[in-house]
Image (cartoon, rainbow, N blue to C red):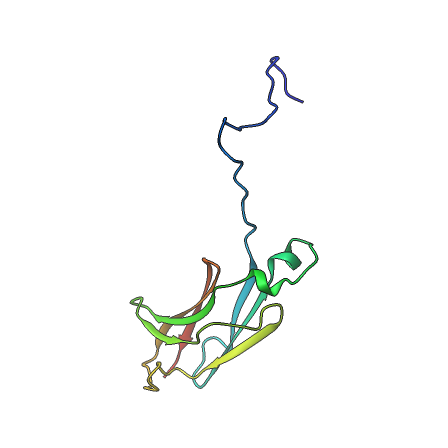
Length: 130
């Protein structure tokens, strides 16, 4: 209930301007195990389509367009790119053996796995032991 005898209907609309509709944020998770690792780490992810995460019906996967999984070193340099992910709606994983995109063995240290989904991102710290 609004008081002070003010008419709030329509709410926050100026003449000539359309109401802005916010897109719901996609739901996704990222997890790496074992961590720290010395041979191979399994980077697991789950991307829920917007329609599933918002409780709607329909073809959910078509609403998510831009997904990527990348590994960066502590300096922010891209060392591995797993590319566009296509298995939306299912839990999946990729294995990373501590090599860069050219197959060269990387030194031990801290790396970051970054999952991006439609402009939103989640990062998991991964420790490589040599």
